[in-house]
Length: 153
Image 1 (cartoon, rainbow, N blue to C red):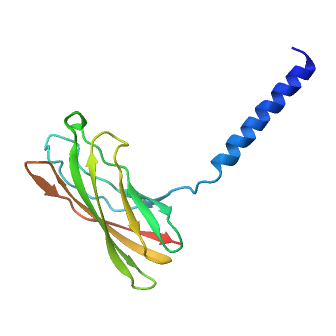
Image 2: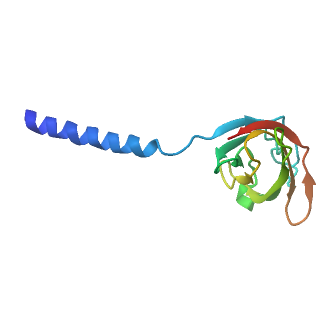
Image 3: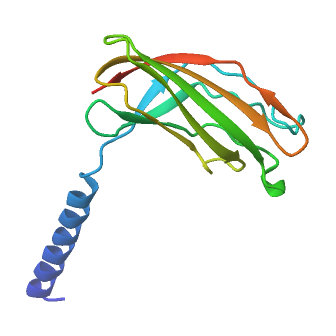
């Protein structure tokens, strides 16, 4: 290959890398929020427990955030998994504002249908309390609560 062809190939590769990197830098990174561990049974009993110990926080406008629960799955994914009614109680420690967010998702394979909870708390330190009710068509079980604190911008 001639020097001109090599130089042209290098320019094309560099331009492609620059476009890729410019596009990758536009999304905000999620922040891990450490929680105490929640514990709960799967309604399938012979399954891994519902035992998250963290949420993932992403900004959702001024003074608001979305918290996502990724760390739950079921060995029974082939049977459709089970439903988890997730509840997130929040209280802004700086302003006293409080509220509750709800989401119902299917717990099945790892990385599947994650619960997403919108919290319009206003800026400041926000205390979070997570709990869930896990069920299928025959029965269900509540989980224990877990807590953590997030900084909302």
